[in-house]
Image: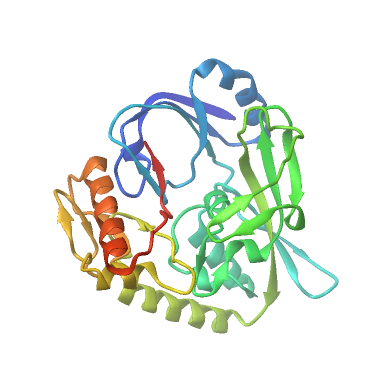
Length: 300
């Protein structure tokens, strides 16, 4: 079906931290026709729309949320387009998982994304948060992004017309179409990649994953790094030196592997997670007089 609506959904079933209370509804859109239908029904659903990918960067409070979760389910295999300068454009739907895209590009002999090996989530969320790892940020490889707004429909935005920053993306729609609702959804994106030997790409991916597995709790229920790295420093190191690593509260804990990862060890609550976040922030400030800014998106 182009559009599937489900009422009274639980955020803890749609986030990797497995936390969060009920939202009003979830709209899953699989094709452009579904977007047209969504534009018609969205105003009557009674809540604020929130674009949701794999929920791998969300910490949602335990209580009810007046939200309509909007998920792009356009997850068909990526498409390739060779360019005159020898690069290749890779077009991928927002619903495609990042690991699947990396595997596709490796087999196709297309390099550039290897630093993101082991990063969870989907293309839409990855672009929206400008996901990054081991020196690679997704935004640095974007050629253009296709966005949807309830008023303006689908539009392409060139990367040069958007603003990418550290874990930040702004399509800079200005005062044009789509701004009255203050909501936009990434529908698909194009990336500029270069040719390389598939074997060499795979070896770099394997090395990156081995490093990540040794230094991060990759199999735990987490939302990735919870605090942004301050300029010239590491949030994980600051938390570690402030004595936060391994700190537990109920079912939630700062990982013993990497202090900047908050993990749900089973039965954790958002209230516990939020209290631990404030504890970690306070400990770092007391020790270093530095304020940590959350990287994880907190839904209160």
